[in-house]
Length: 293
Image (tube, rainbow, N blue to C red; front, top):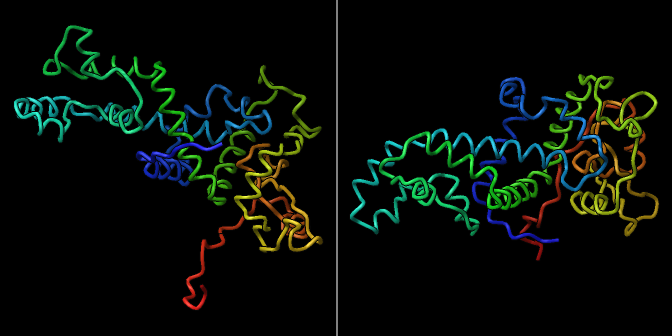
């Protein structure tokens, strides 16, 4: 399946996700909404295409949109609008009447109710708008089909970028495993206990073919630790092992973001102590040697 990437603020949102994961203690209050109310129970289902990282990205993006709306200076925008109201070209260029979420909708070509239209339905003009109007407008946005379309596009774009970074995948799964290890599993009423191993952690589930293909091509058919070929095309001595970056024994998930390619020796020896491990080495798209053509 292909999707058309617009990359509206995508890399900024990737940076926010990275910041959250690098400084989870500093961002503990902001992250509370992701881990509260036993939401981790829903992470147990094996190999959902809308992965746990997708859920985390959605949580982060919604937070960004909420912060942007809260930070919008409506009084400053009204003054700018009044100053240039009689100069349509300036209004079209400066767009003081557009909220940040509207810029996102328009960039992606998604039809939506504008803030102007929302105010008109309430019998108000932009010049009379205040912070309460923005709050009410955003409440309508959150539940709209247009916002669902925007979130789907945005989350897909951010995931597309981040999934290529195995070190970030390890950081994310290490964060999630910490939440699971502290969870009160005995009191989790909605927990499907058939998913658990005898020791209480998640039982191993073979990755479905779509997950195997994604990880295989991301890792270029090579062991991420020793770089040996595991595709079977060059050597039949090695076969691919879809390894859990954070082991199941350490509260790792059966999630596509927690998989990597390892050869048999690395899987048996490098991970013998059960520690989370991966590599930040990646094959270049092309050689910088000018002698190669």
